[in-house]
Image 1 (cartoon, one colour):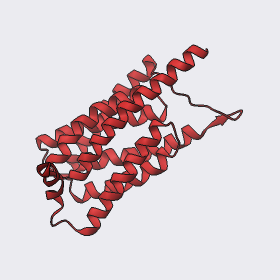
Image 2 (tube, helix red, strand yellow):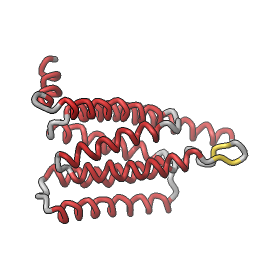
Image 3 (cartoon, helix red, strand yellow):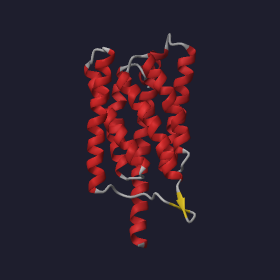
Image 4 (cartoon, one colour):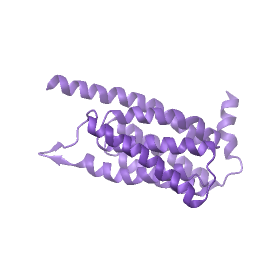
Length: 210
């Protein structure tokens, strides 16, 4: 058990105190955001924005441009999702939990490919060497951004993409020395699985009523 704690804590020995505090804020607000998303609570977006904006700074500071761009996209998409989830008509939510249509699946594939292409271009423009781990975060950035868009539309498939991307990100962040964020993604994975089950039950219930 001590080896596990050492693995997560070793990366923080010698780190500036303010960086550890910022990562701690990201840790808690990020988990809180996913918890709210699971409950279909609009607070997913303000709490998520706190986490993503701080993370943009942390990753820019470390030169992790793919991860930085991913969190920048999340921040922008959070604003859209916040607006979309808050829309009401006749005191009823306009956007309901549902599955993706064939058209939305196609758009999702396009977003996935476009996000990877843009992130690759960012690395080239800034002249950063693209290491194997960078290709992984370019790939996960496509998954995460598409998942964020599906979440803004309240599509069940957003959780499938979150789960896949989270599982890839756990060892990636651990390898880079972001122990707290790696642990956060372990928790994200568990919450995403629970959220998938909860949202699917909501869809099944709606179908039974209709």
